[in-house]
Picture 1 (cartoon, rainbow, N blue to C red):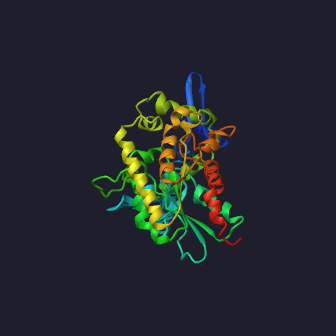
Picture 2 (picture 1 turned 45 degrees about the vertical axis):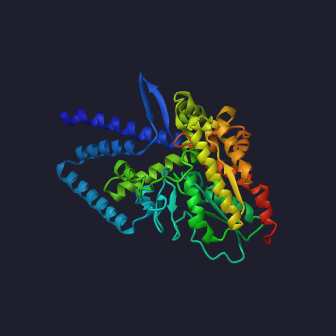
Picture 3 (picture 1 turned 90 degrees about the horizontal axis):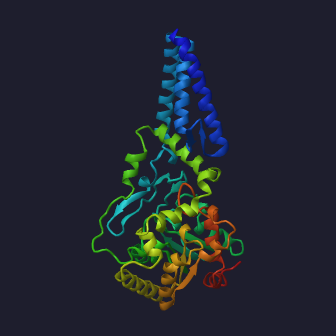
Length: 412
């Protein structure tokens, strides 16, 4: 009698989870109310667990104790075999993301670990070359014209595949007319302006660049001067403890779900459409003391701007000493779009670069010129630029006079 009463409930549960999974596949994420109950989901893994649980119980009731033990034992063995195979093959999809690709550094605090692989925050593939950069292995310069890009997570390309980063999109654009141009990516997430100066002195010189591009994001101004003490650490260590399990197979499933969620993020209309306004409310609106808003509006301690000016002097001195031109491109936060009061930081950086003769390019106007700026960012999952946003940054750089001048000396 008990089994008869449970079976219909399990049937309903199976149909329920299948329906929600199909809805998730079709919409990319949903939120609606039914009989006063809010139903929402953006990930398939909890729904899949529910379906497997309900389906497993339903199957056990249908097969009986003996056959159920046989079926579940077979499934357990199959999953164990899959777990062993994943551990032996150790694909990037099974790696716990950013922590895998970083290592402590006495010079920078942390750096990219040469030869490491992993998955990014949104499921993107990340491979670090032997020289410790997210790029193909660097070769001898030979007759190429070489551009080296340094910066933080925007330059690194968080949330996008390497080929979709503005660094590699710029390289593709330039190679349409000049095959012997290469753009190398030395971006590292969470680096600040002082890191850039260290990278210039310790890494860029050996690459013999013809031009250096610095991708500048507003928080690069937050720590412009070299700290008195550099503590070697891995800032992404906690990610392993928070997000990943001991099962490599389950990590693969989670990474796959993250990738699918990111790929179809634009279908999460109820969140996606509110992206920029939500960002503006979060930075400055509901949080007027947010450091990003203070950086945007130029309301930081005056001493910070003095230190930034000194750091800019060092950048100019490096450019003159090494006889390598530098182009600084400002990458706008979504909350700055069509908000002149939030663009004080743009004007500050432009003024400082003009003072020392460093080329400055602001990508904000081209972002503002788009009919809808929301697709330029990875909303609602992340506030970094999307492939479309990276394309605009690459476009601005490809049209820059200093870059065009460099191309004049390149055989077509």
